[in-house]
Image (cartoon, rainbow, N blue to C red; front, side, top):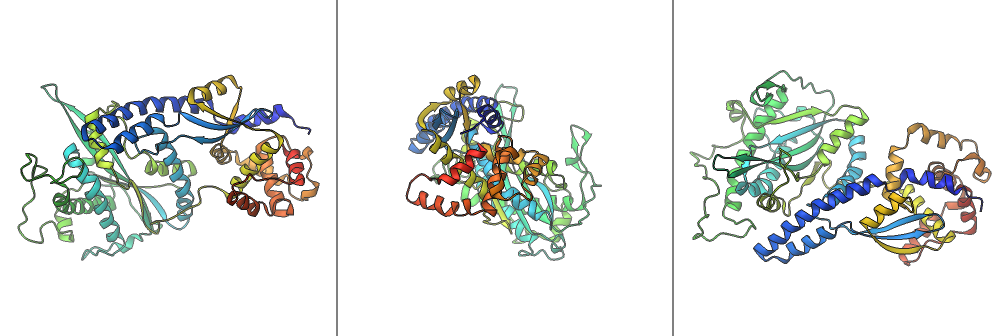
Length: 499
């Protein structure tokens, strides 16, 4: 084999796990230790074994790495990393965010060709911890569902034409922030701010000129934001819907403890959730045009058009996909145990993210299928050229190997990220290098030893040559038989010319 190892290793460093990523993982692990202790305290307080199990999983998250090391190439294929899948784990939050973005971003991009996308934020007034569970489990989900039905004209409001907005789909994500208030007696009162980040797909060309100001326009006395007629209407409509759902939530949540278990009538907190509003008649609290016009001001809501700029689009997309709950308060303090309890019970078994309309129960491919095939072929190639050494490493070991440059760690995720951030000019140059060249005529002289040209050369050969035409069928068969994919001598010779 005539392989330029120095060029290959230099190329691999561009899309392998970086030292900065490992340092970030260590910092997230330190945070996880604190939350793990909180979960252990929950177990001691409520004697529920699932809290103890989650505590241990979160403590161990990302600390065990199972790899196959190929010493000849100085490459390690990361086969497995222990993940706890807790919504309170910063490691798993980041993975979940990336997975959701990978699933929905292509769909959002495709929808933006036919509809305008709006980033809409819907809020409710801050609440104490005792009300948080009701807001997150009952009020916000039901209120948003009803709002969507109104936009779709399933629930009609006489005199209010919602069809003019051309609603197509919506995606909402729940987030909770909180703020500490220090009283004169040195006690601390925490208020929680649950709200929804949403993406709405509405018909193109709507004119939402921001010309109005109200109490929400000012930040500490300074005018910051103006609102459109649509936003003013949305603020009032959202308030009417939320207030009408609060009464229904009272009956199902008010008489329960923090864990959701019913309180006996003899319990001192029975009936102390909120004062149940007294209705004069059945029409009180109804969502009508008359009630809408009578409201002087609704709840804070805003709607901003997601501009057709790739970088700006991505920022607004990420806002919806970010974490459901911040681990620090608005003044950047890490939450204490009592705050964690309210947050944990409020978000337990709650669908943090959900699609509606055309985006309900949608499933999208998470990655380019050809890239997954190429990664499997690459690993099979390494395995047939070198004998892998299975190893179990901890996070500190991985950090040391990367710092010393004694080992390069690669994953499918790394390759996928590399492909996304690859310069468009580099990709086009790699693709056009094959124009007019038959697969049989491809020679190493056409390419430098890097993954970019290797990937596009594979695509060329897969599409225009029988050499890899059956690779998908063979890979599926090897998976079903629980065997490794074995490449033919012709395929190995072709890959030798790349690597």
